[in-house]
Image 1 (spheres, rainbow, N blue to C red):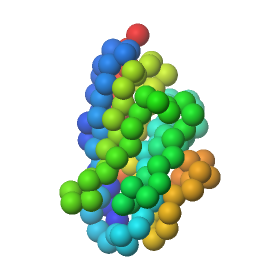
Image 2: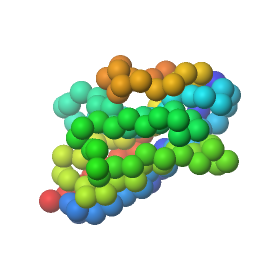
Image 3: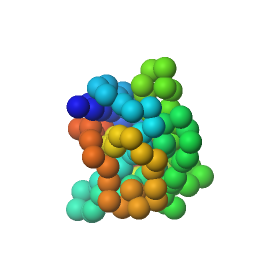
Image 4: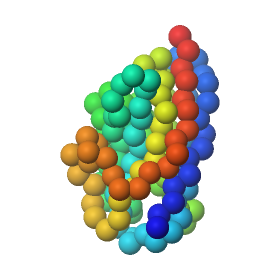
Length: 126
């Protein structure tokens, strides 16, 4: 069973930066899809960014491309989301997610992945 634990959320002003981290434990295949999703109050879940482990491929939502950067450190079993130029509309609960044994594809941003963390809250003030 894959377990995912997020950290790094907080409150910053618009234009600021935050870096989220997600530590994965449990079985991994060596070629897995991992990603970040977010959900704001009263809104549907939104896929933010995906990465195939080994940095084989990276996908971003249009709303964050150029501002957010997803990365991973295989030695630490950790995935990151560097968020720059934050906007109030980025305010949401951010979730780490993963699925085993396959590459990421763009539809994963919409449909989600198999395993989920509990989330970390990001709040951006204007």
